[in-house]
Length: 98
Image (cartoon, rainbow, N blue to C red):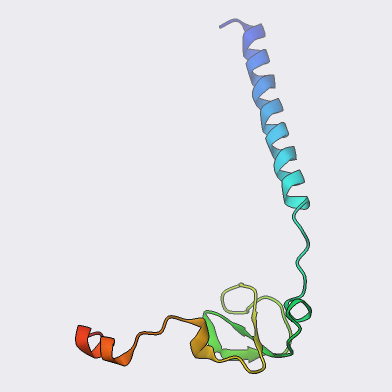
């Protein structure tokens, strides 16, 4: 390869990287803003909790100190059993799941 071709290839690579970084930045900045969950649903929030450690309750939204995840709101009148998988007790008995 001659030096001109090497310089042209290097400049092309740098230009493509810059173009990709610019496109990624623009894509990241044009995402819609998050609406507060309590206002969007119209329910009152009882407390906020970490989905990986639901026994810890917090008074305001933010990041969990345990897993660095967003805290999830618990609304008044919600049942914790409704949010997960439920297996009928007869089916559990028949399959031997403990």
